[in-house]
Image 1 (cartoon, helix red, strand yellow):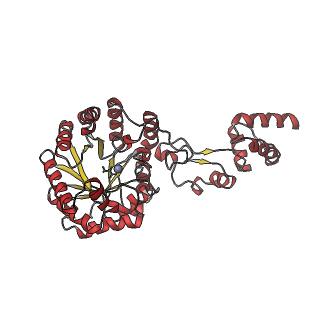
Image 2 (tube, rainbow, N blue to C red):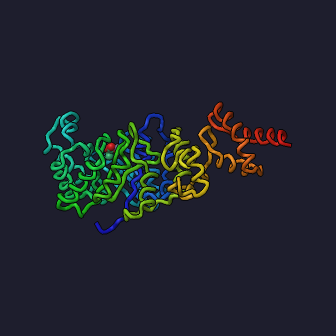
Image 3 (cartoon, helix red, strand yellow):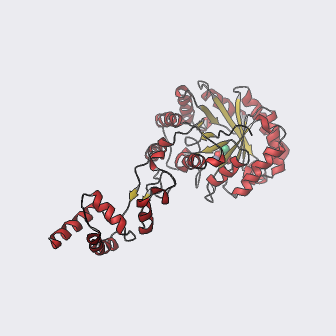
Length: 387
Ligand code: KIV
Ligand code: ZN
C-alpha cells in the first residue's frame, strides 16, 4: 500500500448519536459537522436518513454546508433506504452512501433466516443500486469480526466488483483481539483479488476496551480508513475514539502514517460534544479526560517538575488541553508542595517546606485534594508561628 494517509471517518453524528440520551437536533448536528470539518476529518457520517424525518433533515442540511469533507449517509441493504439516503445527500459536494448487511453466520441465520449466497447477492444488489446515485459507495459487512474469513473475502470481492470503493470490516460486537482483527484485515488484503480498487476501513466497537487497539492493528495490516467518534461515543461501550487514534498516529511516527487532524482542536471539540450530547467524559479518558495531564503522586510530581517528559508523552498544548496540573493529595511529596507554595507567591526554604509538610499531610489525609485556599491558611499560620 503506497499511500500512508489514514482517512478519518467520523461517525459521532450517527453511531455516536445512537447512544441513549445523546440525541441531537438538526441545528446541533450541523454545528458539530462544521466543527468536525474544521478539525480535519475526511468523512462525516451524518446520519441514517431513512430512520426518521429528523435524521433525513439533518443529513440534508449538513450536505448543504459541508464543503471539503465527504458527507455520508447510512443505509441497510434495502432499495428504499438507499433511495432516501441519495435524496438526503443530494446537495453534498462529495456524497457517500454507506450500505451493508450482516455477514456472520449468526446474523445470516438469526436476523435474515437466509443463506450465505442470498446475503452475498443482497450485498451486491445494494451496492449496484447505490451506484446509480453516487460514485462513492462504502459497503459494510456487519459483524465481520465474527464472520468466517473465506466467506468474508468472497463478499468483499463481489461488492468491489459491483462498485464499492471502500469496504468496511466492522467488529460490531467488539469481540476480536487485536492480533485476530489485524489478521482478518491482512487476510482480506492478501486474498481478495481486486482489493487494490478499494480502501479497507476499520469500524471497531469497544465492548472489551479494544476498539482503538483493534483499529491500529487494522491499519498496520493494510486498512487505510478508521471509523471513530469524538470521546469514543457509540453503541453500548462505544466506538474507537478519534482523539486516541489521531494521537497514536501522531505520536508514533515510526508507524509511518499520518492524518489530516489538527490535534490542537481535540480537547475543545471533546468538551463541545460532551456538552451538546450531555454525556460527561470520564476523568481518566486518554487525551481528553480532566486527569489526562494531572500528576498527583509524589514520585511522579518530583520527576515531572524536573522534566515533564518523565511522565508525559504528549504536551497538553498539542491537543488543546489546559496546562498540566500538579494535584496535591496525601500521596504528594515535598517537591510538589514547594512548587505550589512558590506559585502562590510564598518564598519558603527547604526547612520551611519540611515543617509545613507535616501539617500538609494531616490536611491531605482528611480531604481528597488540598486546595490553594488550604495552602494559604497553612502558610499564613506558619508565618505567624515562626515570626
Ligand atoms: O457496528 C457496526 O457494524 C455498524 C455498521 C452499521 C457500520 O455500525
Ligand atoms: Zn457501529
